[in-house]
Image 1 (spheres, rainbow, N blue to C red):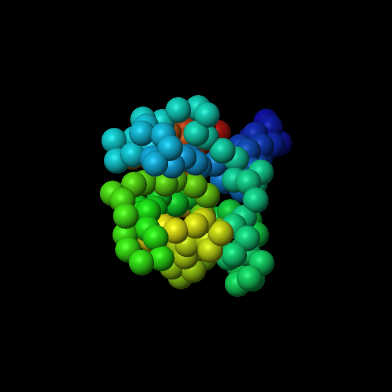
Image 2 (spheres, rainbow, N blue to C red):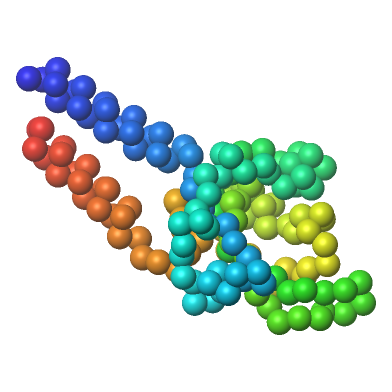
Length: 153
């Protein structure tokens, strides 16, 4: 019976670790999709596995930063020209490739993104954390793990 407890605990830990390794985020741009704006309406086609999304060229190859996503990001951007800001601010959500010890490192604008001005940047480390939804699924996972530990102890 003890072997089964250890095996089950190890299986749960491996499942949680593999889930934590592959970051999943919302990727969308409110200038193209109004559902991505301040009043976010998540959609399955906005969900991405960040391990399958290429890192921004500028931060990865020019600055030598992370090639693997470390979290999610929600940016407030504003269209601009070389001479002036030309549009209303809008929200863009995507994968984060920076270092959480220095969040600004992943919040720089990719130089290939054209004429946009970054107004703000919020980086987070959980799956789909760049939405405006609650953290219920994470809490339920932790609670389930604690209940299993109690049952098998």
